[in-house]
Length: 331
Image (cartoon, rainbow, N blue to C red; front, side, top):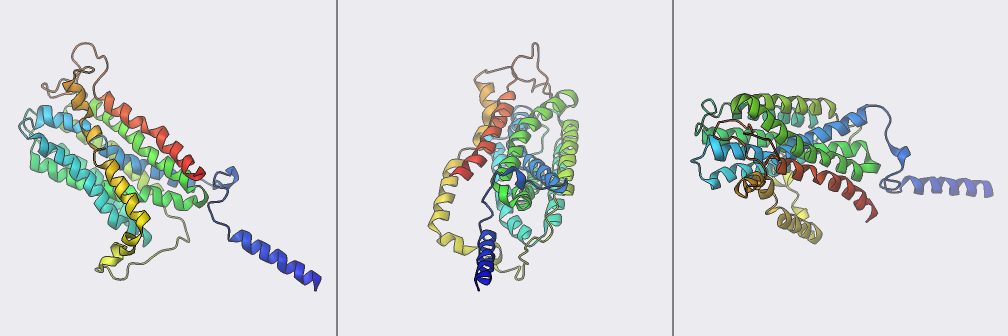
């Protein structure tokens, strides 16, 4: 009887240990996965975030060309609408993308993101008559922005949701690493755009830019495979409102306060990356670009270029994104 009792105790002990939350030992090095596939997914999430919020925060590089050269007669409020629409569509598309990912539609969502982002920037390169002064076609630019914004919306939730499933015991750190892609993209893409415009002019530069974005998003799509055995929630009633929007969440006070706080934080955030370059131009900080000549070339001595304000601002958020991932685990 004692032996049986001891065996039962050991069995119960193992059962209790197996029921411990997955977040325990979050930062234990031995918990990292083996093989290349999980880390390929991590790279995929990093690139997707670069091709989502990294591109969103790079809009200031395009805005300078729109306001000072391609569409000088278009009111600032209409130019600002392009950035506002981009941010809105990324978040709006995420309402539906999250549910599609729960249903296991990763390949369809990733492919749509690749096609829309690449195709949108290619379309943008043709939204003018050769890139001359006041030759930008606002409706065409608006339409192209709409297309690539929807593609960015496919990548936002995908990037962190997929990677965190591969590393359930390290998901805080994984989300921090993938979100760091936004900082990298916000640093790299404005710099790349300015170099290309200086060498080739706006139309050709944006076509080359779209190739870089397309290669990045295609690699992310290929590497972003969901884990086998993933628990899926099939979509049964496609036209049912509650299939896409969980109305029970709006009865949770913590959820409502959290979203109210996010609204307060972001209500003015995206104005900064959109207009920081133009602000530097008005304040005569740094060396301005040759907008009138239709290129991004710097006349005379190069000095500190004004678009570097945008790249530096975006890159500065990288450490904060990763460090905050560790801080969440300690709270």
